[in-house]
Amino acid sequence: MKVKALSRSTEDYTRETKSDIQRLPRNVNPELHPLERAREYKRALNSAKLERMFAKPFISSMSGHIDGIYAMAKNPWDLDSIITGSGDGELRVWSLSSQETIWKAPEAHRGVVKGVCNVPGGESDRFLSVGTDKLAKVWSRTESALAADGITPETVATYNGKHPFNGVDHHRNRPLFATCSSLVEVWDVDRSEPISSLSWGADTINTVRMNQTEVNVLASCGTDRSVILYDLRTTSPLSKLVMKLSTNAIAWNPMEAFTFATANEDHNVYIFDMRRMDHAVSVLRNHVSAVMDLDYSPTGQELVSGSYDRSIRLWDANKAHSRDIYHTKRMQRVFCVKFTQDNKYVLSGSDDSNLRLWRARASERVGIKSNRQRASIEYAEKLKDRYKFVPEVQKVLRQRNIPSVIKKAAQTKQIMLQSRKRKEENERKHAKSNPKPRVPERRKAIIGVTNK
Image (cartoon, rainbow, N blue to C red; front, side, top):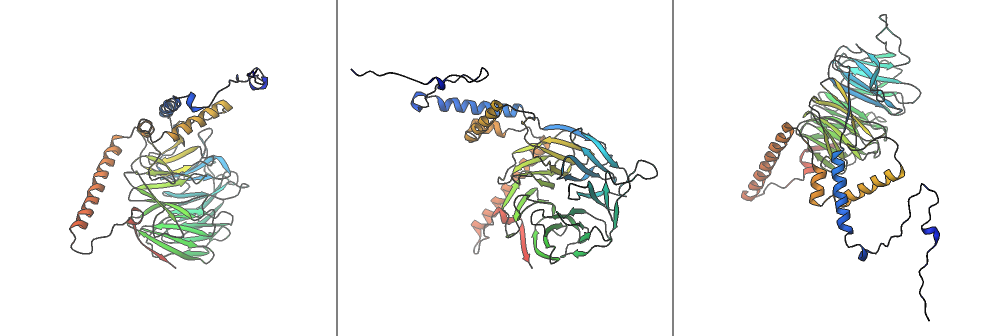
């Protein structure tokens, strides 16, 4: 006689400690779970709703400046500090943990502070500032002595320029820094005069940025709508890109040496590969006014941009549309934005004189998480990613409360773009000969590229 017996080991269902979860046997055969997809869909929808319900990106607004904030710099060796410069010539160093000013120079410059940057190296806390008073100054929280009034700190070093400065950036590992005015000047910290001057036809240069990976390359953008790349080894230009409208800011990707992003007056962010600049790698379009500043996250996978339309947008670097938009009723035109070095927060400075701190992920919460919490969050993210194209889930994930001014401007802009496309198509249809060729969106804003 044949006897069939069910048997199982006690190790399969016995808990090792009292705090362990009860182990339950589960048969994963899909025939026994006909409603599994329906349950997953419902969980994905609930996860999307909870994400939007708990989306509270704004953390705090730090006041202290009298005029607007037009320059900002972060310290790669110090997660807690951020440096800002305002329109009345004041410099401040902020502590992000206490959200207070820890150092300030009330009259650092006679005029607008146009640029600040940290001097690399964890041993010193020096930083540079430039302004419209034709001066570049080196400051330090620990080395700067106080003036006779006992309040105003004195500079560590001062460099005199011939033109009002518009920007500054420091070399990653050499004692060099670059400034921009009517030309790009490279300075040695031990000399009072620039060691080299770089120019290629620009009237006024708005921004200069040194590549922190390919350290001998720097980029600048000017009012003649050009973006120029220079080589420090030969002290000569490499290539020049001319666009239809001028570029306001440049940011190098920290993980990809040849990739950089530009903030343009035509409301778009363009990502380029410096080896082939005849077309953009990607075009990020959602702003309804000029993009004033942008910054890459430390991972190189995300971007943050600040615009004249009083909003901040966060982007995945490989997607054309923003994943989130931040705004407040009191925030005015945004002139500088930065990602923090831990990739968790975003900083913005606007001309309402406030420095604002935001979460990089609107619904993310800080603090220690247990293993079960982490597993639950990861499971919810996977569900949302799996069902993100289902209309109901997609609608919840894309929902944002946008100011009516931006919403109306976006609708008007959409009508204008559609009208322009319709006009071009009609011209092609009715052209007797040689119709105008279609130009890809990645090439439309580019007039030409010149290499030396």
